[in-house]
Length: 169
Image 1 (cartoon, rainbow, N blue to C red):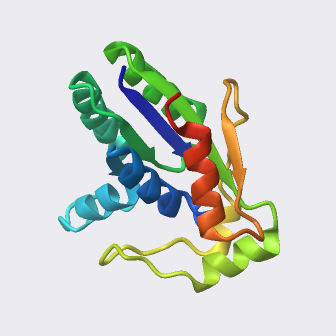
Image 2: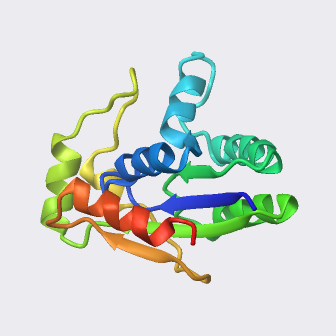
């Protein structure tokens, strides 16, 4: 059975670093919303607010790959219930298992430092500042999900924890 591993969490908590590692270890398709957003913005005709467009496109690509029996890693903020339900529906239509992994940084001082000092490997992507990150509304969870707190921990420790929580038994 194919698996949809959906990551969630604010910018700067370590989602993409963990998603990259999981995709390599599991041989999964990695759907990175930031890459998709920037590709759309690079057209020069897209609005600055893409609403849920990129999530919908990613969910369609995920569904195609899950239907082929391939595991998919969805690397997105996934902060509202509507987009989470979209991932759930995508998995249901293909008979895939969904595993949710919320990545958090519980120390606001460390999280802010990460936001203010990070750079992107996606050419042209403008990263959000601290005010934009803390202004995001994050819906409460209404489904089971795993949580990894990256505060004061090495990236390697967090990657290994994610791998161990999600490896197939």
